[in-house]
Length: 386
Image (cartoon, rainbow, N blue to C red; front, side, top):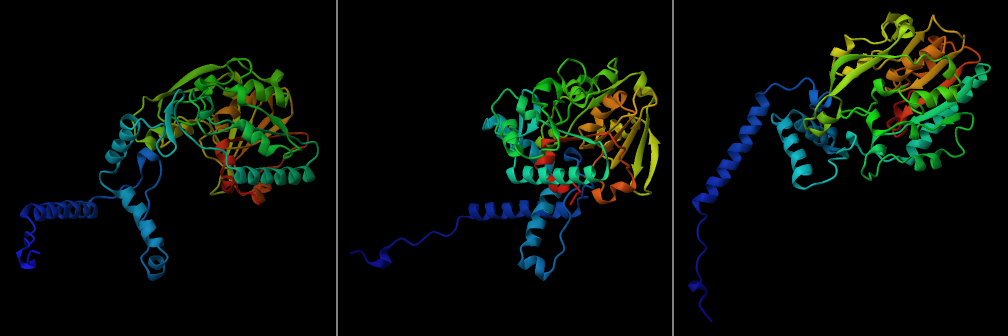
């Protein structure tokens, strides 16, 4: 047996390894120092959201891991090369690895979108809230007629098979529920071209343009079709880039922002509830100044609003329509205005149902329509109704 002293001694760590380690430390340290002095973004423009704030540092937050989780979000949102790295990752996911989606976001026949399967418990919670809403309104007002329609997600109309919105699953979940409502099926009323390629919303200029489309189906169900005016004129409001290019971190050609008008819409009177003062203020149907803001879709009835009232002085009826809605209705409601004396839009994301009677007096013998995109059904907690 060889003497242990005859074994070769381990060589000293080569200089190259130490240099590599030193360069690594310098790079990491350099990024750290640059991020310390670099100005922090006030808003993440591409994603249309505020960046995460630096969490408070105390013993409780450290022990509960709350600080580290918050700091991770803060660091990711404020990193100096964040946008470039997001784009690089997206290119790698789609072009190198040929994956179908990135964090649920995809590009397909209808442009970009988000894969969002229906959440059973959320849909049931939404239905329970809407049943309570109906029972409360029916107990206080006579002759109300109740309707509901779910706006299918655009992923349904993509040429590929996506595990997203499924109207069959939704119908099975709502079976036996919302019995006091008349259901309006919009699945066959839409097609891929009705949606913006860069956004989840529909293009208003394509609504009311063919038999059996969204406006036609809703008007038939509500019984106002004979009162509607369809002679729309298309106006151009410039280019529009929706939420998905920013979320994907990939460039996309913009959509064209268009809106419809006619002699009836030129005469309607629109009132917006100012949540700061509690007063209604007059404004336009299409707000070109609002369209120059962060989200150009705010062109339609000024975007997110708690209550909007559209009064039609040209109406041939005294019937009223109340729509409990999300952002899709901003562009649809003006097209229904010619069929009613008044159309009232209520967004329960921005006004608590308990205080709604202070601002909205439901007229007897009116139509009540729930019109929600599938995104709301998957997140009913944002609706301010107990």
